Image (cartoon, rainbow, N blue to C red):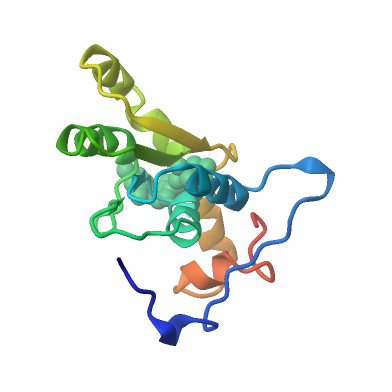
Length: 157
Ligand SMILES: Cc1ncc(C[n+]2csc(CCOP(=O)(O)OP(=O)(O)O)c2C)c(N)n1
Ligand SMILES: [Mg+2]
């Protein structure tokens, strides 16, 4: 089990306004996937705002279940990396949580998954936008993650 760092509790509270009129918020999508998935599921993310939501709203209970391009930050990572994760751990459920921009970069690897019969699950948080870039332009700080998920400053929450 991975224990949350108690020093972080309350420092960066997670909240979002539920949409009026039945619109589905991306945070809620991640919560729903999380609740429906086995607790030892492997989650692979693309790079962008959806990556932040996936990391924040998923509950990681086991080590080595969060796979993403945290260093180079390469868009297009999620689809092929999820295929690799599933090949490495065929016993685990593997979810890719991807952005619409990232997905179109390596969507052709769905052919590989199909041809090789590698059953990954892919959720696209489609905001028809390269939101991470837009957030970067709008937010006045370089430490974009906490601020850009704040309802005070982030137009996409
Ligand atoms: C190959 C590559 N090109 C450009 C970038 C810069 N970049 C980081 S996030 C992002 C937008 C991602 O858009 P999308 O997949 O739709 O995710 P969103 O932020 O909308 O959730 C871009 C262009 C990058 N990280 N990698
Ligand atoms: Mg997008």
